Length: 55
Image 1: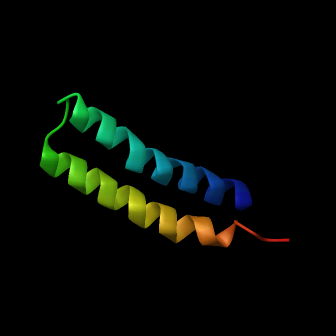
Image 2: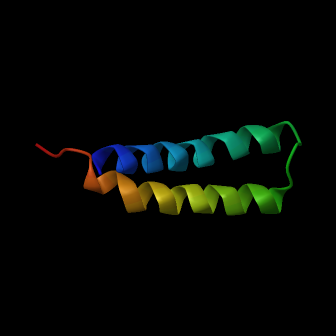
C-alpha cells in the first residue's frame, strides 16, 4: 500500500512540474496548464500525508 501511495505522490509531483515546462515551451495552453497543475496538487495532497513521516 505504501508503494502505491508513493507512486501516486510521484505522479502528483510530476503533474505540478511538467505542465509548467510544457507551458513555458508553448506546447500546451494556459487552460490545460492550470487543470494539470490543479490535478497534480490534489493528487499530491491526497496521497503524500499517508506515507510521509510514518515510523
